[in-house]
Image 1 (cartoon, rainbow, N blue to C red):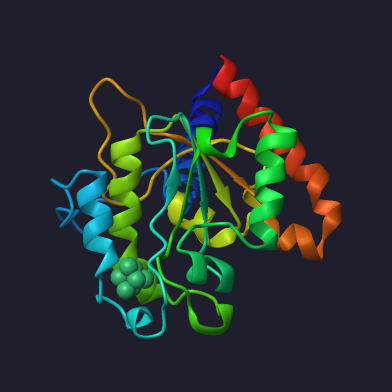
Image 2: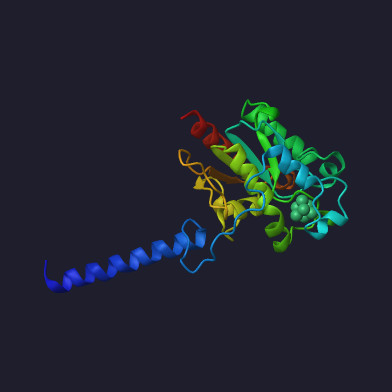
Length: 238
Ligand code: SF4
């Protein structure tokens, strides 16, 4: 190979490495040295009951002013499988349990009729623990303030797979702004900031898929969700 060809190959190699690193940075799978150092979670030493007790009286963001209940999470704390949604709705706010309204019933169908599991065999939580008024989208500062609760829940439960329901949950789990339509259907390592993983464990794998509330408006998306949960079942069976 002559010198010019070698030089051309070298330039192409550097360009493709740079493109790969930029893509990984954008997806949040690797961190830039320019990123801020991680801060210690205020809940790093709490177990799940203590964490739930802390959340029950939380007033760290304005959502506490309008909530009826803090919707912490429910299910099997020894599970390999977590479902994470966006925030409680009106039914959840009334009952204090995640995914109990129409969207929740659809999630239960996906878990029980589709995956042949029991709802109580998995753990279900949301990014926000209090309902945004009128079911508006969560604000970035609310997500930032509330997310340490969810991060600690994940640390304590140590699931193998997290099914991220909808854009907000998926974007938080993966530290990206990419939309759910592009993200869904593939596994990604969980890269939520501040998540500590035990030395002998790998980070949970995240499967982004559509939120059940979206499926109520767009039933055609159910086929995609079914494909996604089949991949989850296959992964868990490995
Ligand atoms: S949404 Fe989260 S941070 Fe805000 S008050 Fe509720 S528990 Fe606290």
